[in-house]
Length: 292
Image (cartoon, rainbow, N blue to C red; front, side, top):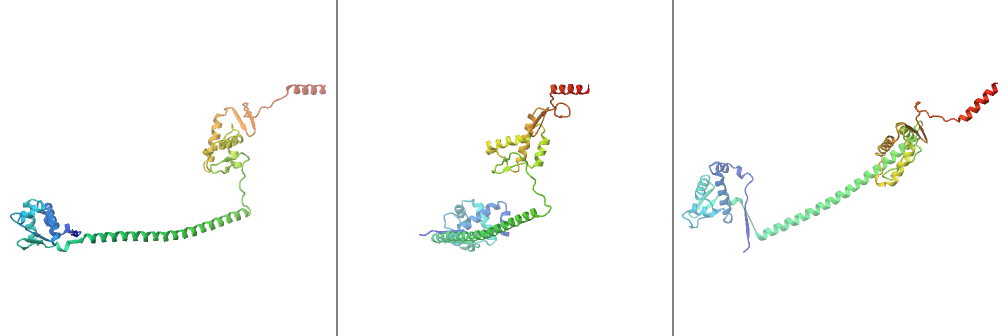
């Protein structure tokens, strides 16, 4: 025999109905509400009807046995239901829960299989439709992206034209020339040199350092340490740090200039001249003889 499934379709506001609120407010009302729900479920297969089969002394005792509830609680529940028109005796051994017939849901086992099969099929159809919509959207996005790319290219070309036109305009300043020093290799493979003004500033800030020679050292370091090369934004900080360390290492009483080294003599750091004393003495003697 084919199976059949039943369910109770309670309204979403079932607990908010006045009758159920009244039932729950009685002392022990939650227990009585549960008993009423169990009675409804027990009656589903019989279209809302409950039957007394004579197993117990009366309908209340037999219902307490079926529901596995205390007979006194079942008695109070049935009395409340009768008073509020929720149960009525149809025959001496038959009782009807008046609201239940309209709340019963049912289907056969085969109908359940068909329903589940249709649900799966509809889900697959929805997935296919969604994928198709996504494909259409992707194609549309691709067209938009292509259009945006073309616009960006046109903007770049227009920008380049404006730059070139500005460079040709009278009175436009030329780009500041770079200093004649070894270039520092950056992490992207490009090279960087300071401008002549920046190089002069390095020389002023680090008087005890041969700045030009240190650019040679920095380039050599970049060649030996490719994984530690600096970015365009970080190269100036790298140079400053390098030159500052060299400044700290240099003797405090020495001052160096590009391609020139000399020691301070205490006279405002002017270089001390060297003289040929023998030659000077001979020149003085010759000058004395001419006067005589």
